[in-house]
Length: 413
Image (cartoon, rainbow, N blue to C red):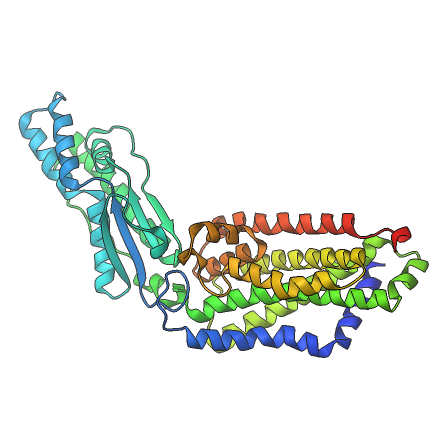
């Protein structure tokens, strides 16, 4: 019976050719216009920046922590000559300074821009990546490196854009740093010379422009997640037409369950959304060289978003039937989609306005899907995607459950 209902919905969609073409063609046109117009704008994590913006934040200075480390050594049973050697070596293996040297080397190659801050002055939303070192981080690292004490709390790394680049630099640097710590501790334990710090080498081929989010990447994701929402309003409007033409009443006389009718709407929403997303992604890949670095994750995100649209189609259909007109879907199409698209970041990166607004947007299904798509384009792995997929799944279940509760029973029609 579900196949029959789904077939009915697809035939109904094919009769509405002008609306169907609008849903499929309009996002491609907007991607072309917005991507071309804004490709030179500098905006971390969004459109067309050629360089990755980074910041290194240290809450205390190297000099202050060297003094603290010297005071700590003075209270230990260590010879004066050995203390001087340790302090001298500590100055050469200061983690924030070594990281800054690594970033400066990449900056010299034209790959990124580096800023340094003392204290907590860096606004993370203004940078693609921020490395934050807590107070006394250097001192704790030296105690572990030279004295074998407990490992310090890890440095905080926040990537708001260009995830693949930030993760690549972090992994390369801290892997090299951990090796350096072990080598230093073993050398001191055996009375050998401490090895010289090695400049971390980052594979530049992994940090090319394919990992940088361009304006076409950004608006491919933004327009895709916005226009699939119109699919829900389109299907809810056709359901209202069916009510006025008594199609649904004829289905009732055929003993078609209410939930089966809604399931048909939801299934059609899923299929049409997947068609939309497939065409948009294919067009952007072929014409604008948009790269989805993990097709499997991209398919999972598209599938989750399509399920949300399908369940939203069910809910709008149920509300239209409950109030006996199409005002619900019309209001959602004119106001609801615009608000969701704004909060989700389809038009621009809302984190530049407010972190609170950005957080709300990431919770919404369209915002979560958009951030997931951008993360995949930047080369992120599944660990960053799955939390956002949870939001999409939760909304799908809520929409479908609400639709079953709101849809009027046979005696109420």
